[in-house]
Length: 146
Image (cartoon, rainbow, N blue to C red; front, side, top):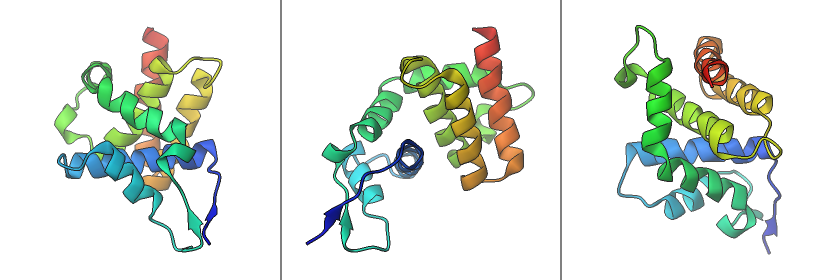
């Protein structure tokens, strides 16, 4: 029998980024199926996850999808000498999660410093140091201009 695994907040953010990336590649997949797909991407067949077990993951993905236009507008406002279309899909997914946590999650639940730091670390994980600096500049700029 498969055992349930509890995810850390960072793992949840990582899965949210993977889900949003998947959705950016295939709009026809609903976010529920995309979340289930990402949760089942692991080597251990004895571990299972369920969308119901990770409400924060579901809330991030739903929240980003619900507020995508406003989130993307905030990102565009911070881009200097750079077009929105040049932002890689993975960096955009990291930025969207970061912006969502900065502006749509309470500061008590996720302090702004934590949201920015998590986005930076996840950018390093999914991309590289250069992407992390890019994301840091955009998210920090949003907080300063707020």
